[in-house]
Image (cartoon, rainbow, N blue to C red):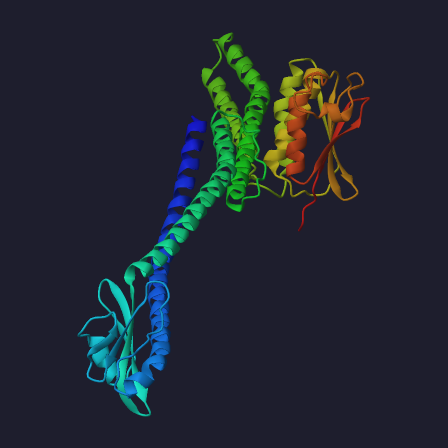
Length: 436
């Protein structure tokens, strides 16, 4: 299908090029042919005037004596000569008995013209200042037509050669232009099929390269958008797992205690549903590369209170404890509360799922920067840090998706997340300081 369209494009390019050359040659050739014909007539008239002048010199003495010329110079080719006396009567040679050119020449002028079958020129024969006769030279127009026809045939041959040359060059240029267009069509088709890895290569044609670059940029943007949407799906499923599990446990507990007030469980479920909606909105904003509307300053007391309320209950269900260690002089931060909440959710979820013992959240001052440490009493982490923070790593023992998301969130806020100690496992979040 693409090949058929490419052949059609090539035919159109060749056809337009040949048509343009034919029009150009026609617009230039027709006036040139007319000019060549006019030039041939003028040249022949000038030749006839020269022949007539030469004959006038030869017969002037005879005409001055009142005698008929005894000898007329022999003309070349098919030129005929005629001599007329001062009355316009034919006295020698071949010519019409009565001629307008002869009468015009008797007035002392050079006359040129003729009929449809010949071209003639008449010059006066003078003695001192008197006109004593006329010499008329004539040649068939067929000779001129043959000269013009030969010149026109030569121009037609050159025109045909030019058209053939244009056709050959147009075919070559059409192939050169159609091939990258066919490639662009194929790339566009692959892009429509969902292959966003396609890229174009420059071909040296500015317009086509511009289209190819735009197509490559579009593929790159679509690839990034698709990647963000896939990351959002994975991040959302990861981040929603824990609150959904907590909501399910609370609802199941309410079902097993029918004697208690169900409205308390409903209110708790509504709060948890709001939390789930908040998580989805925050992750969607991250997937779209947008900053949160509540960015800075960080509401650290409210966030710590929320962590104490939610995670103490989650750890208590596992017979574990949560300990908060807050430095009262910890610096303020301009980071988004929503982003820091998601980062700490990932770290606390990892500590709850993969760690053991008491989970400690320590807030401290790190050389003017807010530092938040999340640690537990679990075994040493042996996974290298680059692998630990790689999304969907096979060797990350379940940490990959969440930790990769947490690091992305931290870096998006201008902070940093790192494994500060493998034993006991401790992750440190550095949040940017407040500007005011």
